Length: 169
Image (tube, rainbow, N blue to C red):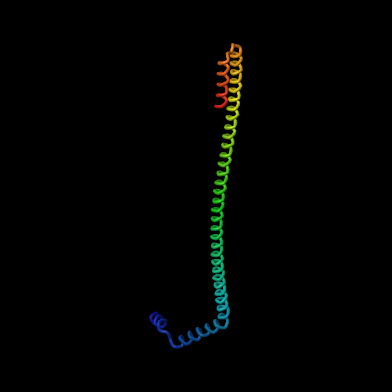
């Protein structure tokens, strides 16, 4: 009997096949009427969510690219501005250096002119002192000569020498 039972399970009967087919078709009909709408609705909703997620991801990617481009532009602008600031600082430093050199040259020239003027004043003072001494010596010499008895020849010689001295000066 077990053999008969085992054989009946392996070889299906025509009635069993019909009932299984009817049950399957009934299951499909019930699934179509009651389950197909919610299933397709859930699939469509899931599809819409996926499309929405893809759209948001594309928008986020586009926004990220835009932000990256803005950041790159800002970086380039900052770099250019930094280069400009460095260039201006160098130019300012160069101008300041040139200005200080010019001030130093003017100061040196002024000091040189003052020194030359001081030297000229000292020279003139020394010459004046020398003239005064020469005049004093000349007066002294003249007094000594006058004190001596002058003869006419000697007097003529003195006058001639004095005139020669005046003409050479």
